[in-house]
Image (cartoon, rainbow, N blue to C red; front, side, top):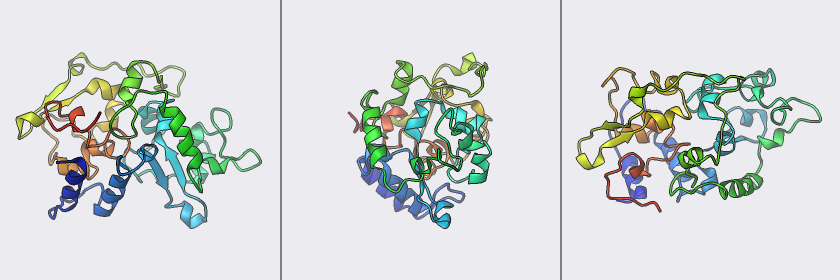
Length: 267
């Protein structure tokens, strides 16, 4: 079954579990951004208009790709306090002009400023069109290893071969907590079908994230403590789907997690 048909089948499910991170309409909008349904630049790019629409301003367009080349995920989602769940943080202009969230870096020194005045560059985030962003992505992606899914960039490969060297902390001294030795080997997670067993690497995730990014809010830290873990719940934005439907490689890149599956549609 193709990835498109697979997602369509999920949309036709009539027995949705309670507490899903996305409803059907939200999932449909996400699927439209996943290549080949949408362009590469758009995957992982967030359009935020809940507050801007009321203020009569253009929506904020946030490109994960331009930030993750400079900083690991943990910098924003741990140090700066951005939630891993879309829409949870609810930042305001007053907060970031006071030096919180985006304002930690966007102070006119580290990155372009967001304060009022002549040096304000509001249009760089509040975009009426995305032509300049699209052109910037094309030149940016051309220098990085390719992937068959998501935004077309192999981020894990770029990190390992040094094509990107993101900072892991805004502090002068990076956190020194090492990954425990027992977590360095990939975990083998069984499923109902042997060919679809999952291989999970803590090491790959720890290079970008922190233990608290996933535990305990997304995954219960107790062994076998996570319940209702299924492809359905993942695709609707729970568990792995918190990242792997919006920013990290999407769920149609099956072989990245299920290495023994024969149906591979990438390069």
